[in-house]
Length: 180
Image (tube, rainbow, N blue to C red):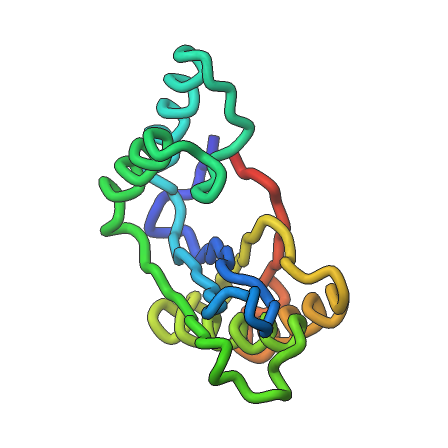
């Protein structure tokens, strides 16, 4: 149980995920999207999500985590209902790249991801910068690049350092499959 009151919380969380792929050929997706939900604690939606998780368990569906591209529509509807009820405490930011219009220099997966991440963080922090002495925590499930993963992690850390002066040592990049 936390002893920090809501107004005293200085951490800002950005939960990110991507859609699309890094294939620039005819079989690839038309777009690459990196989206993030910016939130501060307490996360008011978590009790309702936990209720959905246990309701589903009692109905015979044991889900380790929620994932929109893997879950049935009925599950997605229940999850989105929980999130929509608390949308006033969340800000959505996204970067959408039309892959046919991307310059050649960005057509490597690690470069495209790093550029999209940099733009996403810039947009999110301009909308809601962390206070002096605060924290900026970025959470994702996994980096979507096999080759160049170290380069992406380096670019992510460099972006956090550059975009969060006075805060960057507290800026974190956490990879988690599920937080609940």
